[in-house]
Amino acid sequence: GGAQRFFSVRDSINSVEFSEMHAQDARWKDMTDLIETIDEVLKQMGMFKSDRLGAKAALKISEYRGLRARYAPGERVRMAPEYSFGQADKFSVEPELPEGLELNEQSGVIRGMLARTHEVPERTYKIKASNEQGSTTFSLVFCVARAPPKSLYYRMSDECFVG
Image (cartoon, rainbow, N blue to C red; front, side, top):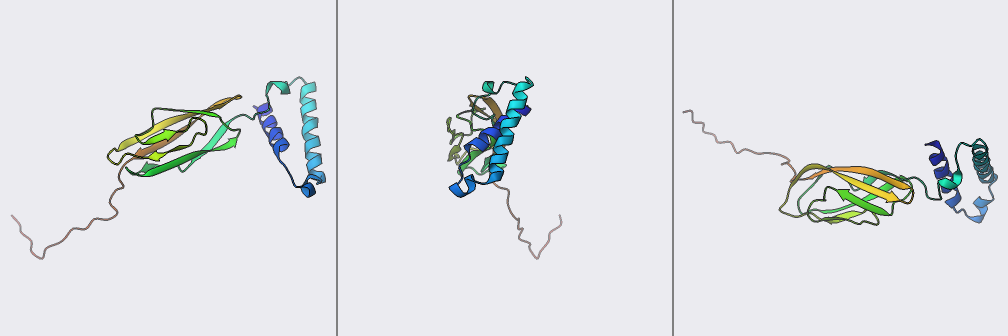
């Protein structure tokens, strides 16, 4: 909810490192002071306990870079998670990926070379990503199939036979 989002912003702000020139910017100090004030007001109102949320942000994968709707048999594939916030350190996938592809269980990167002889109908693969704060799922939908022909050409004869 809102508290998770607030702490995600706070943690992001706390992790930014500026050059010496930019670190002295008064706007930055004003923003960090405001974050501290919001934290204190919410604690006083009993809205939440900040120590229960921990330092890691909640987790959300926004996309898998490299994901396409169709891959060709024999094609080399690489897909990697992009995060809206947080970072996962453990991954799993259901059902099993097509032959030749592997999921790195620590980074979430999927890579490999698809088998040249196997086509796979469109299927949904559920990626589960987790960290100390919880888990999220992301659906990959793709198939392994040869591309349709780009054009057809029929050779026409000058003669026509009707039967």
